[in-house]
Length: 196
Image (tube, rainbow, N blue to C red):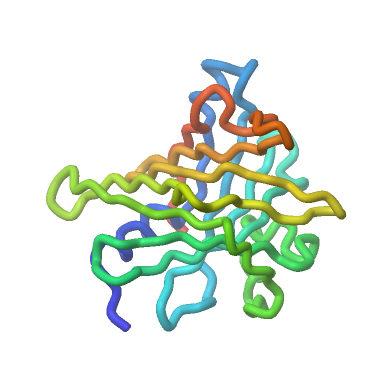
């Protein structure tokens, strides 16, 4: 399958190692200094680009969290891109795979749980020739929930991406619908430090 230039650009923009150092220094009360990895993996390659995502507090790089899989797909025409999230069935087996990509070499689709409501629709804006800004938001009729350690967790997902920056709007939602962690005071503003 041939991929649209927009889907290919999104995959390239997302693949990398990022941190939010400037934001954490400017506003440490609200933003922890994080490192985030979005590492390409060879899954669903017949119709998608797929990334392994993981993040860690800069002071605890050996204790990463939020392992997830992002599958980027074209839907219909070139302007219709969606991101489908998956969760590893055993996140501990992939712990530190952002820093140690060899851990991803044996990853197969049957080691993942599809998260049906955890899906984003991506809009793109061409800001100069072959240069885009992508905005990913949840469709209005979806609800992202998953089970972790016996608890059902709801998450509000979203991001913006350009060639050099990634803004995460992800946040945890409590049963009353209030945000409890994540981008409560606005997005986490990551800068790409290296291309992966």
